[in-house]
Length: 241
Ligand SMILES: Nc1ncnc2c1ncn2[C@@H]1O[C@H](COP(=O)(O)OP(=O)(O)OP(=O)(O)O)[C@@H](O)[C@H]1O
Ligand SMILES: [Mg+2]
Image 1 (tube, rainbow, N blue to C red):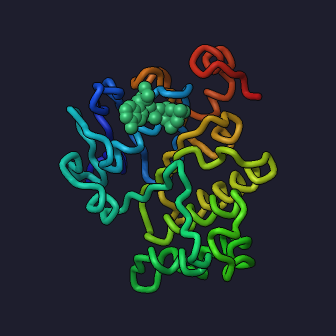
Image 2: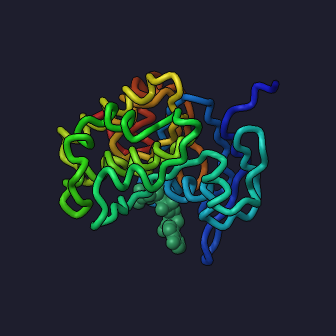
């Protein structure tokens, strides 16, 4: 047994037709931990998540997941290994009910893991709205649904891209409460969450990473980063508002 993290990224470079936007990312995520990826617009947060999922052309570097080199694997193979993605656009199906969303993606391991029932215990609002169609859900309900849907595949790493974007403060708080409950479950997946909302990010994360121009400019515990208003201002341009 090695002491390798669940996810290890070394000197990752990659980007789009116009050129690389990730210029040597180093990142490690331990099993069951929550890492917040922060940074101003356009710094490479979504690109990093896409690279982990196999959706960004990578020019060099290493990505290992669960001790295995996944650089050459297409995204569906990475998903099958246990990486779940909740992309920025919520992608709820208009004509499927809440319950149907949670059963179609389910990847059941002997009846264990994140069954529909257990997901509805963790997200009581989804039980209440079980028969509602996707197009009748509020933005907050949609966000909870796509998180629950990703969990239904029993990932060991959950990637969330700006889960609070565009949501009212009360809903943001609710999502924070739910993510902290999730984190406390014995079989919780590791979570990598990209966020613009610093206070929310620090309320759910153990580790904070700040990207500047496709590189890691800061890494530390969320508690440390929460105290470093100077660094917050320099790298993100906000205090913990
Ligand atoms: N599909 C694309 N094609 C070409 N360039 C892109 C594409 N998506 C992003 N970029 C560029 O890559 C860089 C990093 O973008 P990325 O979306 O990863 O940033 P981000 O940190 O997620 O920003 P935001 O906070 O705005 O979501 C930016 O310069 C952006 O313009
Ligand atoms: Mg983004």
